[in-house]
Amino acid sequence: MRFLGAIGALILALALAGTASAAGYGTSSISLSANSASAIAGNSITVNYTVSLASGGTWGTTLNVQANSGLASHGIKVTLSNQYGDPPYSGAMSISTNTSTAPGSYAIVLQATGDDPSTANATFTLTVLAPAATTATTTVANSSNVSPSVSVQATVPPTTVAHQVAVGAQSYYTQASAAAYASYAVIILAIIAAIAGVFLWRSARARFAVIGAALIVIGIIIWLYGDYSGGAMQYIAAGLIAITAGTLAWLYGDIKEGAYRNGAANTTSLSVALIIIGIMVWLYGDYYGGGLSAVWAGVALLAIGVLVWLYGNARAGYFSRH
Image (cartoon, rainbow, N blue to C red; front, side, top):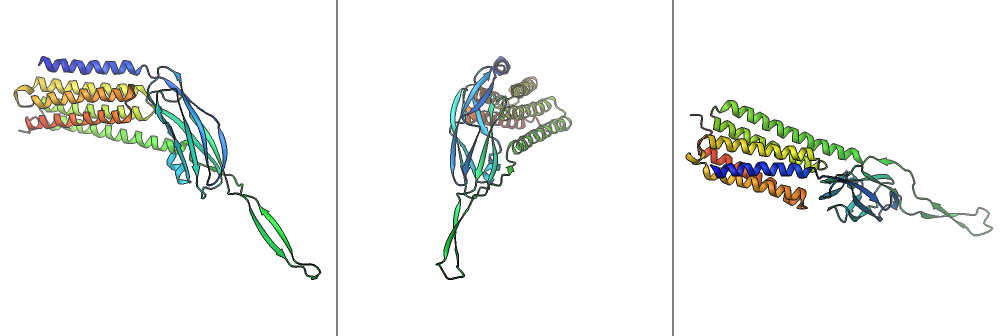
């Protein structure tokens, strides 16, 4: 009992530490060696960039190309040599075009996300020109037959019809909105499942389990949204608090209902340990340069912890209707 109480206190301490660390988030700025350039269709150019710390503390930050898929559909491939690091860091942006890329102006928008999101996007304007001029030879016959025929060369200039291609921020915001709507949908489903569980099972232990599991799931979604929407610390802190609250509520229900007397002790202890480790790994990914691999490892551990806990509760008869 005391051991489980200590584990609960540790989870709360991790939540407070994570929330305090979130206050160390800063912002970054993006600078380019050039803001615009022209390239003939089929050719490539390279532009250098630097992600600098604008305010706050320096943490792992990722540089993204907005609407990269939209650019690719026009035959424009954008590659960043160094996407992730603690500001300041630099790299090279390679931009290649196809011979089929239509002439016109294309906006390539860079945004820093993660722990030090950019305060403003950096926009590079690429002007694609048609392939080089071609020369046509025409033979003009002399009607008087006084002199031989004359060859006249006419130079056909490249097409220079400029048109703006909408591949900039609009597509990016559409993707961001889709992620937000998906997050809302999962959260709403978790809330509905928790409410249904409360009405379906009358026992306190089942209700604590359902509410705890729902809070952990909601916390995971909110935290992930914070990581993938520019590292907004309020979302990450809220997600961590929800996971902690759900774990403590679930743990309280198990202890109160005698988990150590009805066969759920081992799975309860294992699940809490997995959740603690998952939180620590996730915090490492967010704050100490662990990157997305650590983030998703933390998510996996949390998810396994929830499933193991539910399995143990079910085996102990928590969800029996009798």
